[in-house]
Amino acid sequence: MKMDAAAFVADQELIEALKKRATPVDCAEDQLLFRQGDSPEGLYIFCGGEVTLTLTSASGDVVMSLSVDAGSLLGLPGVIGNVPYSLSARAKKGSVVTFVKREDFHQLMLTDPSVSVGILRVLAAEVRTARMALVEM
Image (cartoon, rainbow, N blue to C red):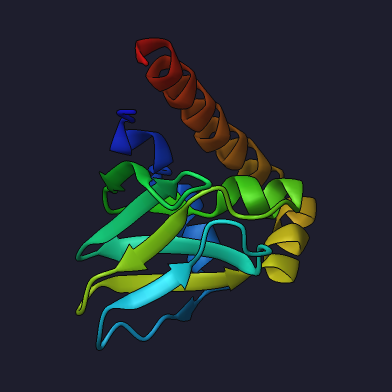
């Protein structure tokens, strides 16, 4: 399955609004941000370096692997839907990643309509990209 990495990228205004509530993630070494199937703790903002998303089958085979672009929001469907993360995300040593707790993210969505609209744009792009990838299979 091939997905477009740009589907995860948010506009700069949305990134800035989210960063106000974000804390840095220590990436002094390779860092597992979240694992497929884990309960969503929050949203990750990828700012620079290298982050890879992977999807594995029930038997543990890697079905998809994708390097994402800076500005990507990671874990968004899980946080929005309060469902387990559908992918795993790993940041390489030296990457710049920040984290927004689920509760802080939800509060921001309720109090800032422009954030909600920006999030919907990113989700729509992710859905379109996933749909196209499935059609290609």
